[in-house]
Length: 194
Image (cartoon, rainbow, N blue to C red; front, side):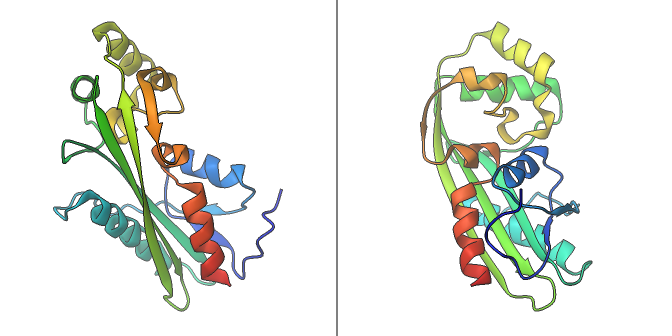
């Protein structure tokens, strides 16, 4: 299925996230995946600004390596009490993150950037979704970390897998929590190519 929005150039996703690729396919896009390997750590605050800056860096990193392409970068951050929870480096750290999120409300920010590799024209935007976790049992946390191995996910969870049962409320874009706010992306891309 091809997307009905006619793009002037082929699309490149500057991300190795299988969830972002799945979501782009879900709305009908054909694209090439060329992951960016930029360092994702930075001290820029607030988180919303950091997510956008990292998305821009990823898009720019790939845009200088390709021609005749529109490059899409994205970055997702999980924020609890103004502290950014990145991707855990161990199962123990993943368990600690989930314990911290237990019974609390946190925010998920995703920054997106779209750049024309030939002209350098770029747009960027961000989305924020509030997510509330119910109180989690230790056994649920350990089971999830052992079975789903969430080391590649900001905040140590992916709402599209078993951890969906941890969530008792979501305010905002569900797809943003998966790592790619589809409506926000679509509107920006539509404006970008018009």
